[in-house]
Length: 94
Ligand SMILES: [Zn+2]
Image 1: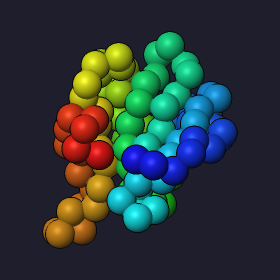
Image 2: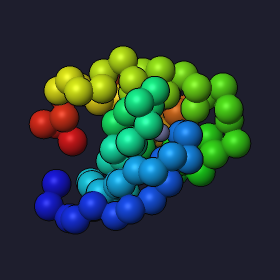
Image 3: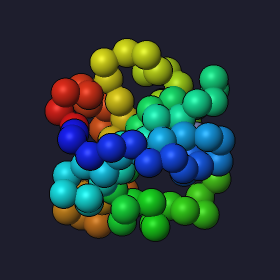
């Protein structure tokens, strides 16, 4: 995680957030300022796939909030079966 943080809006809740690009820019690691949201990492393909899914975003938001301030973070990717999956991983594994 060497690139600098970019100011943006949270992909989930549209509040003020930052992201850094990770995994050779295939994924973004968001850190959201909203108290009811949190940190999460997501691949750009998963972002595209779920951009209109309110249900998915609500689910990810509760997971991100649950792990806020911990050493764990939800990671959203497209699996080899082409389905979107969420894993909770250690931040050090990002
Ligand atoms: Zn947010």
